[in-house]
Image (cartoon, rainbow, N blue to C red; front, side, top):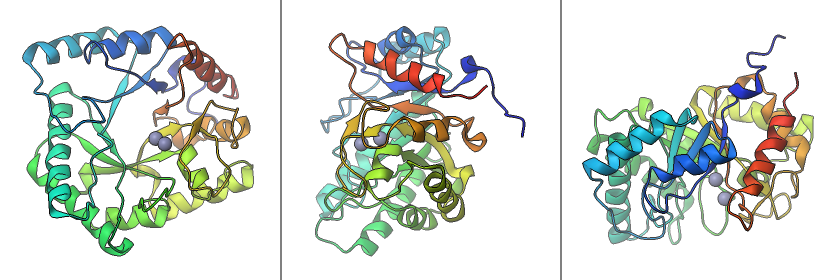
Length: 293
Ligand SMILES: [Zn+2]
Ligand SMILES: [Zn+2]
């Protein structure tokens, strides 16, 4: 079969970058390591405060985006947001923060917001999954008309986190009213920690077959590329450099050469090294080297 994309320069790969010093500065960092795809937080990810973007912030961001080699930007929501929060206070706070995140993305022209579905804590899983769908419906209604998709990220199933199987992610999506506003982000470290063994071609094929059947490749708009520090089925979310963890290099080659994934941005969330960038260069070069001509 003829590959759709043979040119390494056309690959949509990149990294999560800091926005320290202003949102627009992420593009300088991305260009420095050769990203064509970029993930950012549009605010401090460990705080509830929602800074209002000024016209200047937006203009600087859009100007930097236009000048950069980055072709696609995704946002990751705050880690505090829990769309199946067990208390009314947490749930309402989470939903408001999520709506604000979508609004910031709309203003910046970012089309995808990646989020972790949340932790069910005291509720049963079933009710929690329903609550995530309802939270998405709430957020989509509150931001009607925005060309921003909310992408459910597959989780490692750490603690009481939901969304660690494709079946659970599919269940969340089945409760969403506006299918134009929802999609999925696969994280390689998370699915491996959740028990999907992608280390062999057979394991990779079985994993992707299940994904295709339960969710569908049309829903897949982003992939987080992280190797795993902990073993298969550990349910522990610890990222490792590409090829240096329990997953190993070969699995990333399967993803890089899968024709169904050519247009899906692949983004590393791995440590950057002491100088803040050289490990990104190394990880991205390794990924490029895996592409078969
Ligand atoms: Zn991730
Ligand atoms: Zn993770």
